[in-house]
Length: 526
Image (cartoon, rainbow, N blue to C red):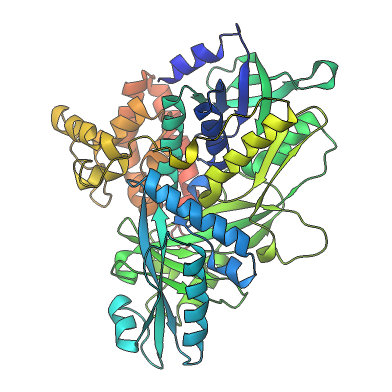
């Protein structure tokens, strides 16, 4: 479905939507798919791009959360591990098992962590991904070849899963439309309709045309992520904030920092957090941090002090790490639930909550990618009860996502994240002049993927293409900047935009790309 077709459906006022979901991140997409797959007439609106906020800036892990185990939140771990299994089943083109190694330098730590991770494995029930194993020093080095070797006593191996977060967001919006839902990006809810004090719809602003139009909806769900308090304020201006925001940042390095297929877990940094060093798309991610933030922002970025702190925490394990060697960085804001009393930021809950206002607005807040489906299921169940709808059973636990297919049936390996559509993109690369060419020698993307993102995946701008339809900005920010002028020409041609639009879009992208550059890289280094 094109954006124009989606706008036509939105403009049809002959009957109300059953569900209007506000927010196109993990929680909103999961909730909208849940509603549509139950047969409800569902509209999702996102003011920017699908997954453009926190949902494209995660640590790229589908996991139970080993640090929640340490906090005793066994129910949260067990639920997340079940959802991990469901994602591996329903999106095998996007989610894969990932081995982790904990390198240990004190012999007494080995049995402690081994037993703890055996418990973690046990909480997954019959859905284990691999055995927890004790590793000798040489075995640990074999798996983590750049690890510091002096005084190394061994390690522990365990398993979790990895994914491409933005690609999952795009896949969910495509799946939503497969099931009759409608998704609209660059569209913002700027007010609610409340005759007699009950919400019966909203006012939609199309951010491309500047036009406003009313929408009728039986139920409105606020799934705005870090902006959910602002959406609540449209309904209740004096509503007490429910979120405490925290910035989590990552640095991206060449694969040589940690060659191989195994990730590394540093179980306790100086502030008590765990730190991951993760191979991803032929790069290595290092993260994450925990920095309190006063208000939401659309383009958070890592600070120099965060970058140095991350490297200083990892350098005792990987002596070659240096923030000067980073090729990109990214930051996301976590929507943490405010709790009574005083809690360190890292102990605030990653669980989700659902509530309803006096006017009937349902708000889904908190949560994480791994449990997005369960959050959506619980939200629709709650909404049915709150608004007196007859219950319709959830369909999503065993629902394959758009493009899901068996391994080896997706065509060229470079297009495997598209699943069954990979062969179509392979055909596009072969048929159109220049489509098989790389967008930049340092990036693993072909022009065909850019064309596909514009034609099939609702990309409207360069950042949509280079941050989310591909992950170019996350893999090498400087290379993405160098590729941008050529792709701006292509984007303008495909969308039928004039030269003036092309120049403005390129300038906006160059400004947005600064948030992906490591602090040590001067912004003028293009």
